[in-house]
Image 1 (cartoon, rainbow over the protein chains, first blue to last red):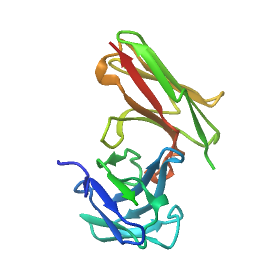
Image 2 (cartoon, each protein chain N blue to C red; image 1 turned 90 degrees about the vertical axis):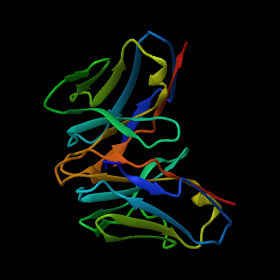
Image 3 (tube, one colour; image 1 turned 180 degrees about the horizontal axis):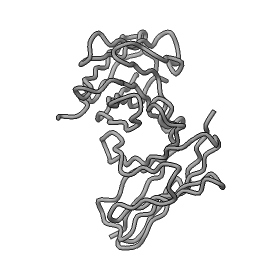
Length: 114
Length: 113
């Protein structure tokens, strides 16, 4: 398996622009997670899906952030409008089942908002 | 909720020596303790995990110990090699779902040649 695939690897945008991050989980994994990594706050869980359904979005920082999972093989995280403080590395991860806590991370998207 | 503290934040050891990273957790309900390794430009990768029904687990040069009474657990890397240089994260979870995992702040390990 190719693992969790994220795109783009790097994104540089200007404040106010819309940003869309993409993720393809490992085939057969029921859970998909979006994390944000910063020096100040470490790894933060933003939202997670089970069988394409959003279960907990309490980690989403503001209404400017939204996530979707239209099918089992694709998810997006959108920031609109983006702000400089959104600059971070965003990771997508997937896991197999309810009782399997092992997370498989993608390589991340380095987002810079100028 | 769970809080995981990790020390040290940076660690430099001579190649061939051992490295130890320590973590404490607050929630006595936590029973699953994974360790992730993050190399430069990559996502974290699970390297070893332990459940609360055992006190130690080994996998070649890495081992993890758990003291449930004291609520702390540690990662031990022996005979360190250059490829061990990375950021290591401990985590704790009450189990049942990966959504409950709380990560420590990370330790940047550097191996000196």
